[in-house]
Length: 485
Image (tube, rainbow, N blue to C red; front, top):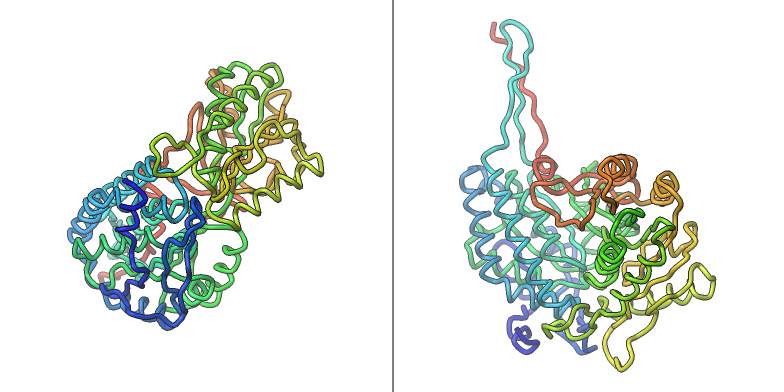
């Protein structure tokens, strides 16, 4: 896939409501810039309250189309096949809109299709139960869909995030109004085209692109049964406040400052290389669950840092459509300016020692490129170690023993993920149990298998996505008590 070929499949930016593309919207339009070239990618509509209400009404009308579990199962399988068929196009759109290397984007799209297949299997397995309630009484519990689900997704992984929400919501019998970030709308509009191509009934899945106004209209509408949001803390607060107006339940998947803890019995070369690769090279460090703090036991500290710096320095930044590229730009000019300002503040305030990176790569005159950046000897209480940067910046912190590592790892407001590197099985279980986080990975990196729950603690949100727990987020329980005499 080339950049020119990607532009050929670029959607025209219209909203997708009730199975059709709207010719106009009341919210105006937005110009989107390619973060790699600083050129205009295209323009897309912004939904106003009128278009949002229209999408919600279409979703309400379509709820009956999902009453049959067999139909939901077949629909999800068709969507999985459609996503697979459009894999190159959807990946190319992500590379255009937010700079993710095409190869990585393509793998993410394939993984999203697997989420649809997994949840297709849940469509006919949401069973009720009979409750023992005494003689001459029948008391039973049945799961019921919420109705219309509002799914609000971020810019850093739009297709994968969409799959985490749409697949279980539909499996449970809900219709969906999907609002992607206005910073990366085109791949989600590409998914809307897949919905149309595979024959999703009108109103079952609607896509409204837009900013805060559209988000507020979606979250404040009394006909939305549940909201599933992935994004930052500020936007999450606005979502929660809007949802509270009608007591609408919310799943929040928010930020993180996850720690990767490397003990002295781990292989320093492997742990250092993978920790840096996961934290700053993968998606240019733009991931909520990435291990952006590297905690290293002192006996192997220098060796791990050496490996981490070497891995970061070896990243090949460039055009996402170049197969040799391992790291693309950050999402755009605003992200670029923000990340570089954080790096400069950390240097000025001596929050840590800059070991590599910290600036635009040499020779890069255009594009939102930031070198993979590693700070050593970072103060655990500093903003560099406490704040989510959402960019390619790794903070290395030494520790003395297990208790010290756990204390440092837990000393943030976040609790999304934790990573442990050790060959001591007992220690691995002890540390995994002690970390205040919803997801723990030992000697590896999160793969987000669809059968496992994923969600954060503390300021990283509440509720989960994935597995039986994820599909149960989209049903509410009804208890029926029948006196038989």
